[in-house]
Amino acid sequence: MKQDDLCFKSIDLKAHADVCVQFRRDSFICSLARDGFFDGAGPNGVDYLEGLRQRQARFPDGYVHLWHRDKIIGQIEMQILEEPRIGYVNRPEPRYASFTGRDQRDRDDASDQARYGAERDGPLDRAGRDDAC
Image 1 (cartoon, rainbow, N blue to C red):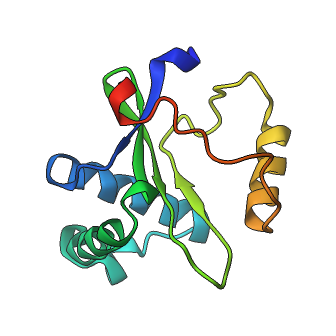
Image 2: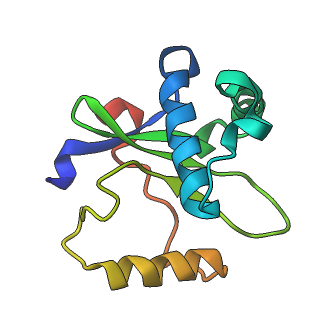
């Protein structure tokens, strides 16, 4: 998979609500090791989707899908929170596919850095966002 084949687009809830629910449910199962997503998300994820609409309205750039050519392969939901300083990237199988050629230890290290608030090397690069797809 070449980096040129990847891009980020703002989540289009009208077109991809079902995809959002699938990604979020998968992240719930992976994070909590149980499938209780719909307990709090409502039937078919309606409560989750309403919350996502509200959060996206407050911070539109924080909710994006990762596309590989014409297929959504990941979902990023970012919020500006004071505490706790955490974030998640929702991504389906193959869970350990590499876009950079680095092995799982590198990704685990990066995940730990993000989880514990380590600073990034620089600002987020907006190249490849929306209009580049």
